[in-house]
Image 1 (cartoon, rainbow, N blue to C red):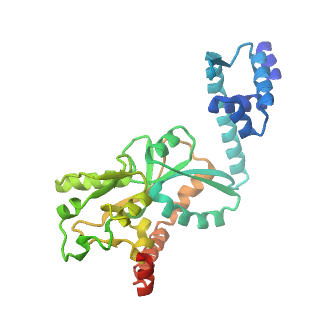
Image 2 (tube, rainbow, N blue to C red):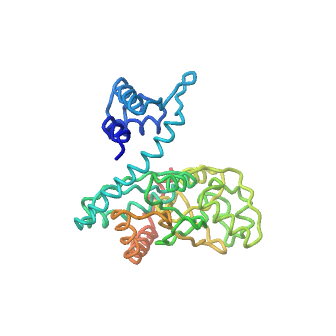
Image 3 (tube, helix red, strand yellow):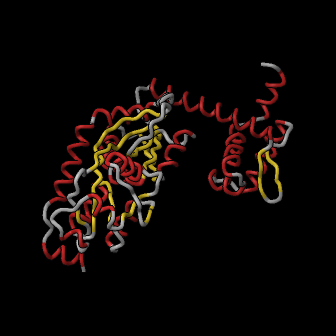
Length: 331
């Protein structure tokens, strides 16, 4: 090792690099300190020592805003590679010990909140040394977090067609039309697609899987979609319909409770339910660590169990609710 490199290694510490990475990420000394359990003066001291070792500043202020210098950007790239290699080393050591342990980061879109929790108990029972972190995010954020290597996996419906992404469908996602039981359409024996669409269609935002599935269906049967309102969550859609604002299409699993209690009513509409899939999505070229691989394998091996579990949940909510329960829910 050249003497100049040896001197630099002797003056640097992993703690300094960790502090730098946190400041780089948050562009704020105080917030970086909070995440690391350090005071702001301690963070400033670590950065100052790092700059002395490098012989160049890594951050600078323009007004009250913190910016990274060119030297800092180079350092950030090196640290990312270095810490990535250390993670791989840790994973390899775990493999050598024939043990699945560590953290699994999963991003799930809004719709998947009624799916993902039911998948985890069996996996965690088989791998007690694994800690799972779940983040509920919007669809575009989920893909970005994968590409930024923040999460190992994403659970979503209508996975995008992208060669960089691997997709594992594991469960049917039935999209059903729902109305308020007091809506005039509820009294009709037959309702056409156009009548439903003209009754005040409320939809998810354009980037959501539900919106895209409905848009594709409309294109296939050559009808237009003119929503009166767009809402960025399934709970928002359900409450809007229960409030009498219009009609909507939601994943069946997200509305089981409201359907069972009589607060929502499924409309027997031609062409429905629309059948899509919930999918496990991850980067195609990403080398899976042992925890990620174990979860992907677990999902693949238990698809039939998930389908049975789904059927049982739907059947249990299709039983007629007691009359007094319906009356109470409508009051």
